[in-house]
Image (cartoon, rainbow, N blue to C red; front, side):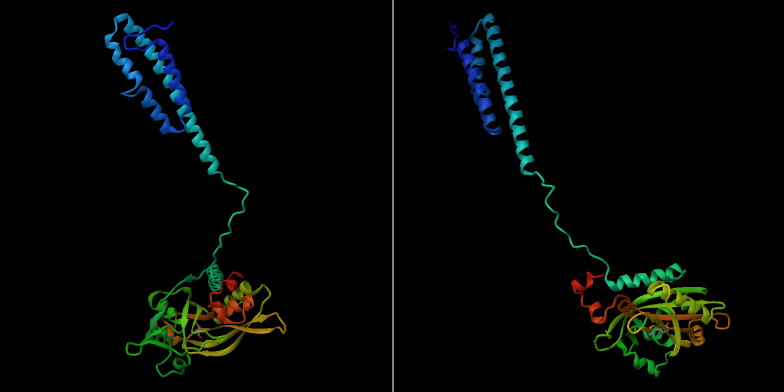
Length: 341
Ligand code: DAH
């Protein structure tokens, strides 16, 4: 038997309403639908609101009872609502994890790994050898004045070396050139530092040379300079022998042949033994004792100090070390070539 209530609702109606509401909550397909269910059954214009309105007309006893019934309804609905909400959230999370699952067995894409250019590698190896012997590294500008590139190095304006070097002028008027060698860095060091001096000077140099398998208008040198009291040819030889052995192999020999450079006296061409077919000697660098005129021009007392200097072509060392027969390979930036080193 159901007991009629003033506004037409009964306990049975309320039970049915609760069944209906909780079922609708459980059946909601997503959070929006669930919210609609909440509004429909418990919102401002819902049956629940209506019943709450109707309580005004009840006796105190009835009101108390109806209040308990409505609270029970609300609690039941809230439980159904929360359960469904949690379930929908869990479903959504599971779906997302499924969609974003990583297959760790898929092979990784191989990213190309860069490396220093062969010339840079060889230059660094060369510098390492000298730094290990106590040399400092010094650098100078590529756009250089004739003063440093020629004059301080005892290369007079009408000296044949100026023509031989195929100088590229930036401004003939202002006597500005692209340096034709790294020797001007020697002059820059000597005019600014007191002996004892031991520096190596790496850098690019420029000459108006036509390109072929062994010539490039831009190439790289490492210059060396030692100035102190009592420096002799024996120090030069020992230093360069140690260098040759570190770079080319422990049993290498070097030999010095007389040569000429305006900034050294005496001057030498240095060869290193080469084991191949046929084996023999390979020229790797020019060197000599710093000409007293150069010391004087750079403000160093030649009666107190002596020095040796050398200039090494980095391309030549790289080509000899790695069997590269065409200098253009060092400048073409062909990745197939570069990745071999
Ligand atoms: N500057 C010379 C050149 O570019 C190389 C050289 C030779 C440098 C002898 C030196 C040296 O310091 O002593 O051809």
